[in-house]
Image 1 (cartoon, helix red, strand yellow):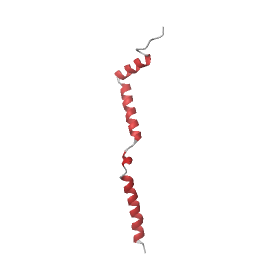
Image 2 (cartoon, one colour; image 1 turned 45 degrees about the vertical axis):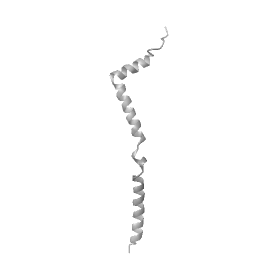
Image 3 (cartoon, one colour; image 1 turned 90 degrees about the vertical axis):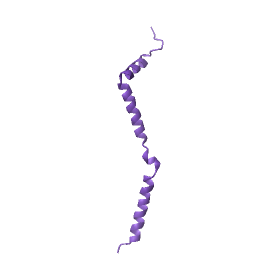
Length: 68
């Protein structure tokens, strides 16, 4: 004969554990997604014409004294 109380207790405790995990606020936040979005924005900026020219001017040291 199956002990219904033991089955209900075990399944009830597992359901409570799952509910506690699902309701945690930090389960909805993925820090990797924030970093990926920032990287994509930087890549998009670097791929644009204005971004490329800004990177070239920063790399050449425009605005700084050039050695002769």
